[in-house]
Image 1: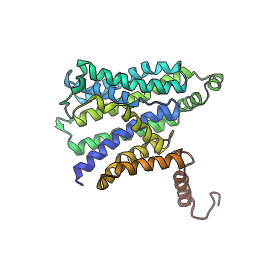
Image 2: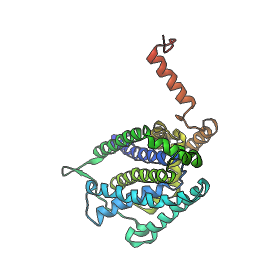
Image 3: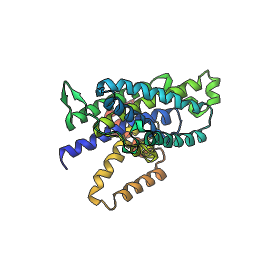
Length: 303
């Protein structure tokens, strides 16, 4: 494996970490199960591609515009969640994937089935970033996504989202504006996804409708569920595992998809909360090991 290959895998892994963190806000905290998250990813990627190729904006100038566009779209598409139950929301988000994909494919403005190509790579002080530079750029955005997620997880807004997601009637009785926090969840989540989309578009240099289909939404949700729904550590670990594991198994090319699929199936049966979810075997083991290191093996915290 060459350094360039490892950096490329690292860059894509970072992009999916941002995506999984974004879905964690919507599905992990607000309990709004989405099977159409790749649509927001695609909207961000296409917005960045159009602003770069047709408006001539640089990555840095286009990124704030992409965030605004995806946030507005997220708010607009989040409105149906105020009127439908969780089951129908899942169906509507599935439909969202196909609607957005059809718009990208059949409207000439978006390049049709030929997509948009020749998207320029970002520059820094006039110099192209290159593979290593882009990996560093993606890593910066991953760190920012983690820090903002950590900050949000400690706010009252996160608690309000979780309360509204668990029981809307009880949340309303406590004075929580359920509708407002549902919209907030869609807005924040889609903004994260838009950043991931812009990073994807400028790194790959092209966008096509099939890049953001229903199967991509399943991939993102699988990363979150496998890692640990409702946890930042789970979102990061799930994205890392499902991006790196298939690459690590390329040496057994004929069986790698079977093995990675079997691992997923086994985990869903024996660890439904995810590998690092609340109460998972691995998470409990890590906590015990940390306490042993912090307080001394065999010593109680008060001794």
